[in-house]
Length: 338
Image (tube, rainbow, N blue to C red; front, side, top):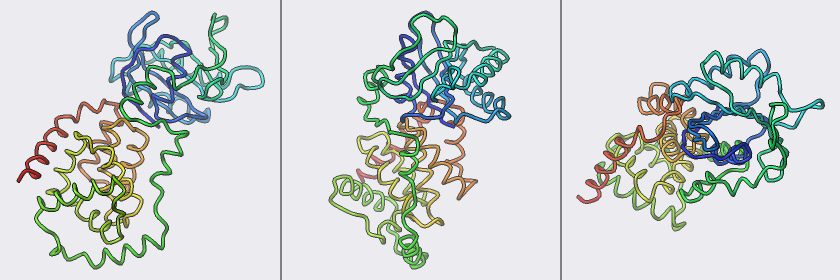
């Protein structure tokens, strides 16, 4: 399931559909999407988006009710249901699912707004409305790159992926022979006497991050394993969280992706949790959820991971952790100025 908390004004059904890739961060397929709305008339404000693969009929109620839970927390009263799937032989796709969504919305005290469908989330794709005789609801889909939300995503440095799988594949593990070699390196680092003072390690990691992001340094297996160990040390990890409030946030995320792909399982959890935090804070909910899942599978009791999982599961906006990020940034500046 994908949940995305953002705020944006939308002018009508066509823009609503064309904005879906920017809302989710990828172009969905075979999807049930629920968009929580506030406001009224022709100017609506989108605040929460939930996505799930189209479920089998026995699971309709459970999936819909789970998707609606964050809506109630946000005080949403109107929801736009969207199906992304080619039409059935006799009409729009998944009409029984859309009818069930309407029923569950009623039980939750919410009203459906223009239940919509589109064959694909791409320019020129067919789209329509499930309401009979809805004037002007249908035709070719506008270019998703021209919507207000897409423009906002570009300005904030976010990239809309071609598919959800494109995002998930970023975390595919490195080949097993490579991981096996790094496990041997890790075995030689179990004695922590090689570690410097945490402040010194933080300084060196920030310097490394600059070199890494500029392409002037490729991580050796030795260095990668060392980083994985260090990110499990609170005195090193906690100040580095402050990088999310700096222009280096994107580079930090890229480094964490490299670590999650390449670290042995026994020291992968902290890097995965940090990546989950980074992606959640920067609005990449799919990458964040996948990284958090990896980290919590490896270390279910990880306190930071559990906190971010609770916030993300409730579709709460990243602003809820801004004080934590700001405190970490202040500590990072203190360390670097010593």
